[in-house]
Length: 292
Ligand code: NAD
Image (tube, protein in one colour):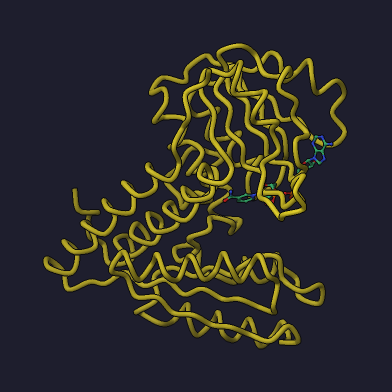
């Protein structure tokens, strides 16, 4: 039976460590990191994510600024808001919750955030810096995945890593991070042929697709480490709504060496990584070291 990689517990430790560092920053430099979150419209899932981010930011002792905009807000009104937050010295991190309504160009919005305040790590400059191995703000979900993997095995060098999903938010940055750890990385996607055979070669298997149980238990190599990024809402046999990942958990845990659950795996680590990024952004904007 696989070891369960407990993202909830790891995230709680990380949040505790961030809040201790925030306390030190306040005491030593009078600096309080601030995160501004922008939510456009009424997407149910986005509202839940934003609420959790706001609560956890405050619990970590940081300033939390919430901007809720109507679905009909224009792109230029949103850009004006970002410009004000870029100039606001109390705001060290800016996060625009995705997806945005169709009439707003997400690429333009993301790239209007000052790179040093881009705590989601989606700005083209941060993407480029990550790719050439320079210090940058790293997207929160891949950063969380790496911490989950490292908690299970410090040395990832030489391992075959297979990531299913090639999004800019998860798959691509995670591939870069795994490459930096000297993994041999394969990115699979919707056009990949014979996904099963590719998965069966993975020492590290990450799924970021968003389709319930697309990865079958017998696709998992015995002893592999399995990270399930997918979040899918399905109806259970009893008719109740239930959150599941991309991986057939019950079957996969019989063969894997270690596996993350959904919920309680990658999700909590994503928010904890966001707090880490906000702390890093605040310290770098004020040219102080992150407290040890
Ligand atoms: P996306 O839709 O941008 O990308 C999905 C990827 O899956 C694409 O690259 C596509 O090529 C690939 N894909 C689709 N069908 C496939 C198939 N049949 N076989 C192989 N690959 C296939 O999604 P995303 O934003 O990267 O998110 C992926 C999943 O991760 C979603 O369920 C999302 O909710 C979840 N997610 C979770 C967190 C978290 O914090 N836990 C964060 C971000 C995303």
